[in-house]
Length: 112
Image (cartoon, rainbow, N blue to C red; front, side):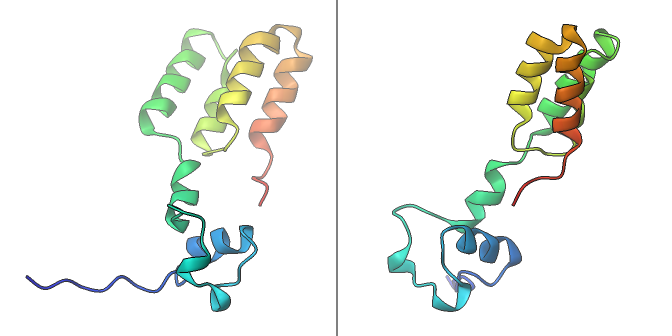
């Protein structure tokens, strides 16, 4: 049984970004310096919204005649704060100002 070696950590753009968040540059990264159990690829996976979540968000938006639209937009755009936007829309969307704030949060670019 042959095994192929894993590529060096930091070779992909997602891994390099995750390493920079930790204060490492890919050139100076050594596996023994990483936090226990840390894998750079987990950083990107953590912010992904599942297709089921997206579907539920869009169905709720249709059933509420657009009331939950900010949540659906956030889920579709894979925002890291999708849950917060959904809660904000649900609890404060009735005030219109809360709904607009949630919509702005859903449409903003993801902070790096």
